[in-house]
Amino acid sequence: MAEQLSLAAVRGALIREEDSIVFALIERARRPRNAPAYYAPDAGTDDGRSLAEFFVREAEALHAKTGHYEKPEDVPFFPQDLPSPLFPIKGYPKVLHPFASSVSVNDAIWKMYFNELLPLFTVDGDDGYYAETVALDFACLKALSRRIHYGKYVAEVKFKDAPQDYSPLIHAKGTDALMNLLTFKAVEEKVKKRVEKKARIFGQNVTLEDGVDKHEGSADDSECKVNPKVLSELYDRWVMPLTKDVEVEYLLRRLD
Amino acid sequence: MAEQLSLAAVRGALIREEDSIVFALIERARRPRNAPAYYAPDAGTDDGRSLAEFFVREAEALHAKTGHYEKPEDVPFFPQDLPSPLFPIKGYPKVLHPFASSVSVNDAIWKMYFNELLPLFTVDGDDGYYAETVALDFACLKALSRRIHYGKYVAEVKFKDAPQDYSPLIHAKGTDALMNLLTFKAVEEKVKKRVEKKARIFGQNVTLEDGVDKHEGSADDSECKVNPKVLSELYDRWVMPLTKDVEVEYLLRRLD
Image: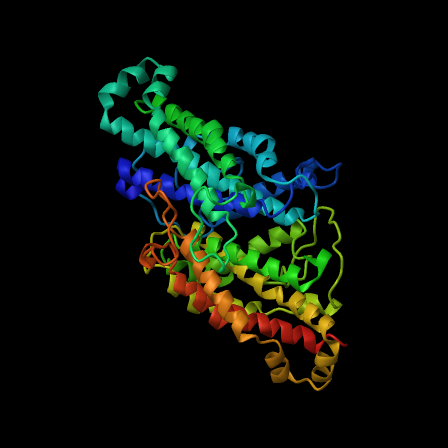
């Protein structure tokens, strides 16, 4: 990403992230809701944290040991006390303002994922396979967080393309005006249509019997592993607004 | 799985695992080979283990703490000294011979994955993002291992359907005869065709410009994120033979 900072490259990366998000949701949808994975246990197990929180904290510590979270789009959900890398790290070109690494909307992503999104694409039920479930949740959270924090690159590219438009708004701390400048309704509608289509294609049950792959629209959405409409809703209500929050937060400090 | 042990249910599970394997390979193919992740470092870092081995060992320890590796299809690559679960585990119905949990071909999967498969579907190169790379490898290894160790259920179902055919071969320790009895060339050809088709569908670049989704075959395979032929080769050379190794190993102890 960082190597070739252009709007085309950033857009390409965002489009590729859509596939990862759709794959991760399809995988999580293999298991039912499994609510006990999200309750804080009575006591005795890791400070009363839920299994999901325990897993994400520990997994992030492990990822940090291997050198993850060096790129500005890889943002941990629990950044406190992450261990240092145990293996040598290859540096990456720094193309963003140094402030970029501290921009995070992960608290909002966490709440959105568990409180709003999960009930939309998982079946109510409890099969007891909580360990597998929380590992699949972590994959969804990571993919969503990375997509949303790519907003830092989007903001940098847009700023560089038109500093004369952005600088006065940044100096005036014009959050709403910045948000307006970053919003392109027609583009957003295309993104929503594309992720919906991806859910339809990647979530179909592929059989050899069909000579041809399913037309878009001819497949019954109820046969898809994740309802395609959930993807357009996810992008409309959360992914794109949170990405723009990241962009605004980044831009407000861009001239510091 | 265990709840409804029938050939149809086992086949359904195997088919669903194909999607997970294709998704995992597509995700890994985002990064180039990144060979340094697989070298043993000079010294000083975790007993001279490669980053990949370090990550898989630590990730498996974490998964074990959350209660993973209780199902016979979930087999760790490094079973020695795995920690005990820290969270309560819901039992699963035991439908296999107790010996099932000790059947593992993970050493062969590990060697196959790193030495043979990885060069087939990743681009030669080094982008330095080793932490992300080994996490993606772990996802591939887990998906392949689970698919292959489902062979335990396949074997149990086939044995239960025709104990009169299997028992004499088991008593005679007839490995080759058992392998013959478990081999259905026509089924294997169908599986290879299906995984190839899945790679073509799930690995395409979805755009809104196509009014219809791509026909099988009309898409250029070189545009797919993973070459579909690699999937049929993977299944032909390794997944199906290793699954049958699991089946034979399970059956040889089925009457103990």
